Amino acid sequence: DGLKPHDFACMESHAVTTRPGDAQWGHAKFRFRSSLSVLVTLVDHLYAIHLQAGNSFLIAMREQLSPDHPMRRFLTPFTFNTVWVNDNARKNLIQPKSMAPRCFAFSDKGLQLAFANAQRLVMSGMEVPPSEGGPFLNRSKYYEYLKNKKGIDTEYTRQADRLYKIFKKFVLDYMDCYYPTAADVAADKELRAMFVQFLHQTEMAVGKMLPDLRTIKDPNIIKEFYADAISNFMWVVSAGHEQTGNIAPYVQDASFCAFKWAPGALMGSKDTALLQALLMSFTSQTMPMLMGTDWTYLFPPVPLSAGEEIATGSFISPDTRMNKDPAAVFKVFQDELQAMSAYCGEYNKNAESRPFPNN
Image 1 (cartoon, helix red, strand yellow):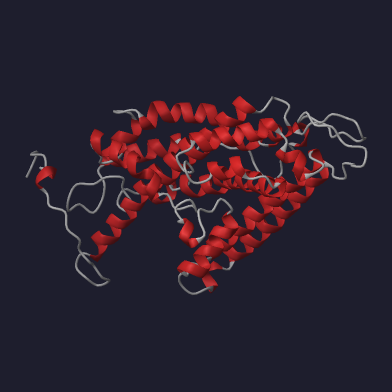
Image 2: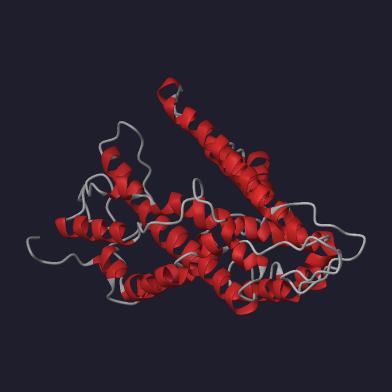
């Protein structure tokens, strides 16, 4: 129609099934890739990781844990620059007429509806109903559920499960350095206040997990809950963030994947290509390296004798001794990451020798 704009309001929505070999198969693949890139960027990356997991967890940690609390010091690399990044996201990705709204094909109302529905679109374990054993904060149990109940067993879920278990072992071993028993973990008022606030603030868990935390009396269950929550947070803001944020190779070509396109087109416009490149450069900030960086200097000193007060405000009883060194715990963590890195490298190197879809 030349320069006449399309009347999108008059366009009818209907489902169309397109199969390989059909005339519109190329268009269908382009629309699928492009729509998925918007879903991942808006829901999984911006909403779930930045606005929910990262923002809510950091606020609760900084408001409830004292500066020298061992768990706050432990989480420093995983919360690095979160305030600055999320403040930029608020200004440049969320506000109307900012960068993200110009990248996508949503109207102002459409973008509001997308954010309003984001919670139910996130698939990370919280969506599993109690009737099926959920919701899952423990990612290993979630991957087991996907395998046994949904038939989803991929190399991605297996590697994600392995990394989660490495994180959780790191968390539990580190906690054992500062808390003699599970009862000491449960008695930490600051840690409890942090998780109560986090579960109140995040939309991902309201009405699902908070009542359990307030009524559970068994200190071992409380410690396990804390370990799962912290490990899940670490996984989401590291591996999860890298997975959802590193889509630049896909959207660098607007004919392969575009955030928006005109009806009937098989590629995005030049403006769309530039906006995609700008958004990718904005969301590709350098993060602390998990491997090869020694952050043991962050860990507070561990009390070595009975009667000493630890950073959580508790005292070691005469019949209890701290038997773990956080520096040694960190070394085991690094060794396990190196072993997983070697496995992943070998797996990727042999990709071409495997049949579809594992190649």
